[in-house]
Structures are given as C-alpha cells and as structure tokens.
Image (tube, rainbow over the protein chains, first blue to last red):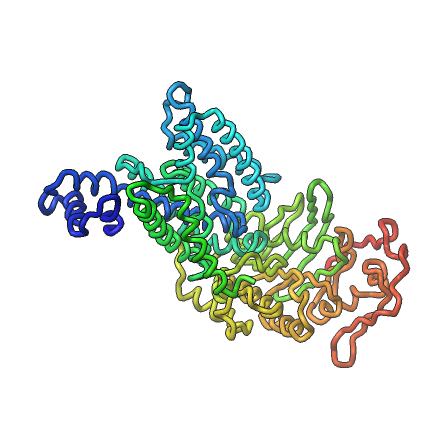
Length: 321
Length: 274
C-alpha cells in the first residue's frame, strides 16, 4: 500500500511517504517539510489507495456470495442488476444536475439508491410462492439490468458531450475522486458485511449441497438466501456508489480464489476480500501510471489484466469438467 | 428413533399429492417406500426432512412433531440423502462435504470442535471414503459419490435416515455394499427404492404408495403379492423366499396389457398400517 501511495504522476520516495503517513496516524516524527508532498500523500493518494482496497474487497466478497446464493458461477453484481441500477442513479444526477429534484443527492447517494432499487426489484421478482428461486433470481436480475440499461441509454441521449464523458468515466469505474469523508462509511459497511458474511460461511457451504439437501441439513434456505441477498446488495451498492461500476472483480476474483484454495466459505471469503483489495490497488496503480499524467478508468484494466491470468488458471485446473 | 406419520395430506399447487398417508417405522427398522413414478414417494420424504409442510397430519420423529421443531433441531434427528445431493459442490473436498453434516450441531458462531472431528472421521471410515477423502467431489464415480453423501448423513449423527433412490445408477456390487452399510448402522431408515428386488433385500417392511395413497404395508412377502404387483406396478410377477433366505421377485415375460392396471375404480382401498 505504501508503495502504491508513493507511485503516481509524481513519484515520492518510500521513506517520505512513510513519514507522512506515520505523522498523521500517530503524530510522531517531524511534520512534512513540503506541504505539497503532504497534500499529495495524505489528501489524495492515501484515501485513494484505501478506497481501492475497500472497493476491491467489497466487490469480490459480494460476487462470491452471489455466486453461491443463486448457485450460478456467472453471477456477480452486474448479472444481478445491482450495477445497472447504480449506473442509472448516477447518470440521472450527472445529466440532470442542478435543476432536477435529484440535485439534492450526490452522485454516490443516487447510485446507492439505484443499486438498492434494483436489489429490491430482483428480490420481489425472484420469488415464487414466497420462495426465492435461484434461476428466477438470475433471470429477474438480468431482465431488470436491461430495463435499467435502456433507461440509462435514453438519459445519455439527452446529455451534453461533457456530461457524457463524465458518465463514461463513471461507468468504467474509478477511485480517483476518493476523499477522507467517504472512507468511514465505506470502511464500516465493507468490514461489517464481510465479517457477517464470513459468519454465515458454514451455511454458505451447506447451500452448495443444493436446496433440498441444505434443508435436510437444518438450514432455512429461503431465509438464508434473503439475508445474504440483502447483505450483498448493501455491500455492492455502497462500493459501486463511491467507485462506479467496476466489472470483472466481482466475477473473477471469487473464482480465482476458489480454484486456488477450494470453496470452503470460511476461508474463501476472507481471502477473496484480501485478493480483491490487493488486485484493485494494483489496477488503480496501473491506471494512473500507464499513461501519466492522464488516468485510465479502472474498468478497462481490471479485465485486461485479470482475464489472461484467469484463463491460464482455468486451463491448469482439471476439476471443472 | 421411531418415525410415525399420521393421516398426512399434502397438496402442491392445489393438487392433492398425498392423501391420508399413515405409516410407522419402529426404532431400528428399515422401511422401504415403493410405488410407480409419480406416486408421491419423494413428496412424502420431503415432509419428513422438513422441506414441504403437509396440509394436514403429523410427522413425528421420536415423540416430537418435526414441524414444531426448529429446522436445526429437526436436522439433528433426521438426515437425508437426496437426488439433488451433489448440488453445486465443485471446490469442496470429500472431507469438507462430509463435514457439512455437522452444520445442524452449530449455531452461527459455533466453531468445529473435537466432537465434530470425531463424527466426520468416523463417518469417513464407516463409509469407506478414506481413500479419496481429499479429492474433489466432482472427480468421483457415481458409487463413490453416494458413499460420500451417506457419510455426510452419518456425520449428522442422526436417529432417522431418509434415503431417496440412494442406489440409482450404481452397479450391482456398489448397490449391495451401500445396503450393507445402511443395515450396519442400525439407524431407523425410510428409503425410497425403485428396484423392488433391492427393496425386498434391504427392508424389514414395505409401504406401497399408489397415486398418493398407501395401498399396502407390512412385511415384504405380504406386501409384494402378485395382486399388488399387477395392480400398482403393472407387471405379472411372483415373490418367494429362496433357500438362502433372500426374497426374490420373478417377473414374467409379458407385462400386463394396457388398461389391465388398476385405475381409480379397481384400486385396492385398504390403507393398512404395518
């Protein structure tokens, strides 16, 4: 992380970075000599790296849980419609901006509400006779995703070129706008939901056995599915709201970890969180260094970097046939 | 534990699936549930492992109505091996799947202890899955998989076993081995079996379901009469105990002509208990 903080449009020696961070955390050591350096390290890069880590962890954890909840290896926040809901919320605020009733809301708040709206719809439409059915949930998610996508496209048509660029950047995801103010909420949500979901680890394992068997193993499948869906919608909504709709992490990091250490959720969830965090910090680092001093959106790099590695791992693994 | 099913009615999407089903399995008994496809066998099992709530009637395991117990408490008494049992378990090793059987013994905060370890090791050894305990479930043969699922059920430390077509798709030797395993556990068992020969070999008692109603129940020889075999299963056959003590069914060359099977009007009406 310190390394990620030190590298950027301007490279800063590791020692200086450490000095600044230490000074702010503990008050120890001399105050940084150069206010610009202090500004870059503490006000821009540190929150940015922390946010990247939190977002990566959140997306990866939520992807893992969703894949198990709907027993579908292709499930992720995008397939279940959460991301498209968030996008519509964000795009509405970006394009309608000042005049609209939504103006009171920031882009993040609107995105969060969008994700929650999508989550609620999937939840409502994924039921049959009071039971949440996996296939129904996925199909409802995909359908709702398309509806939100059409609405988003329609709104985009009315937008000015400048707004469109902002929209585009938001849709591909970025943590460039990270600020200290956002971090407490995001940290609490990511840590608390991840901890709770890990507590459900044993039951998530049981869910892998199939619904009927899980019932016979003493799990109230319907209630468990509802709780897990709500938690992962909350988690996804929070991280997408601050970082935009970043693809790939939620889909592939879970599989990466599963292929490496197996599917026991009690181990899987903490490790996916960790790998998701590391991965997004790295991707963010590349996004601001590959084309200095310009930045690339995260969404472009996440897949570009991750997919080849994933395909290699897939070829190596024989257990999936 | 004893299993008692009393006057059970089940409807699915407003269609009656089971009507007035009454049966009993004494402690340690193996009761086979037989009947043609669609007769309601699996549905009956679902009411026992608490997946489908009956419209009327009571299922008791021991002295308690399973539908008044919590899901977890019920699962500490009843374990099931079902047709969906493989699920989507890619990525779990055999040992991890067997360990799923311990989940009803834990609350959300529970951690594995020595008791869990002992139960899992014991189940792994009893079912002979030790040689592939660390393999991925997906890489196992059909017979190996069923043994793993039975081990999972035994790790649950149940008082009642519910088995749905445990031996489907298995070769004959694997079938016999599984049946011996179940016999050896001494646990009260309710098993749905398609293969009547196998049912006759394994079970102390049989219950015949036909169109959602119990049409016969009792010791194997008393239940699998030529009359029942013709009316319910649509075959001409006879059942005898051979000199080696095994009950065998001999099927005749031709099944009954269409229409000779029992219909609503001609079906036997008794709903005998065992």
